[in-house]
Image (cartoon, rainbow, N blue to C red; front, side, top):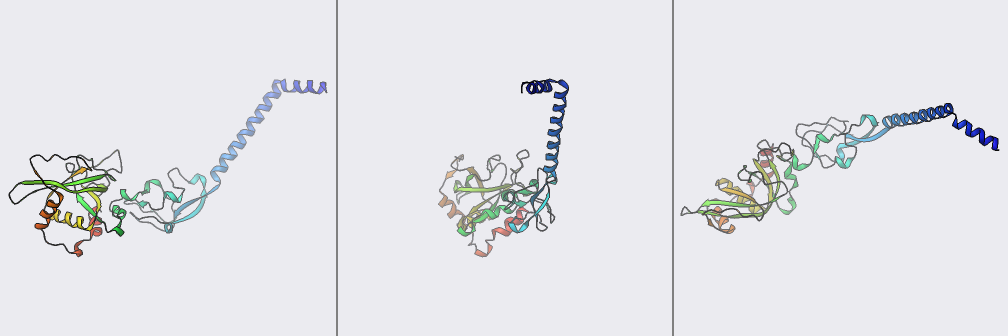
Length: 270
């Protein structure tokens, strides 16, 4: 037994033997590592693909998606592997997805970043309507009006005596989108913030009609973050009720037939 142990120690202390063992171990590790890498790249994976040809600005549903198996190496980093990253997204402007194609992150976006689709965020069941208001850098206080923020809307006008009246027409209005003149979301790319030209928000039917009347009368509307103070200068401060009466006194009754916010806003936002 002692002779066996002595022989074994001599075997493992022999430099040539140790070198050979190390070479064999390294070769085994390399073989299995390479084989595992190849297997990982060539093993099939299931990915979602377009079940049909999908056009620009289309809301994606489960009916638009089917599944295929492809080699893992064919799935790039920006390809979407999970259906949860696709459902309820929209195809971007000028993006058409061919049938059978994988979905890629740069092809899709959330509804509020797609021109015209912000209108779908509105709760129609509650009777709200979408209003698409013309704005400027001045009226948005230097781009301080942001999507999902709340604003108050002030109005300035001249009364029958030529006095400037000023007051808060509406409060707690949620901004849904801010677009430039081309209908692009100016905050979609934080590195290239555009110039605001339109904002979209939801209001009830009465407020919608009131804003349409104010637009017809070319009244000056000023936006401000909710609850902030707006300098009134030497204006006569009046209540929102007074402002509404002022608008109603100078406009005719608006029929329900003219309240068609969806076609108007989509046309303007395209």
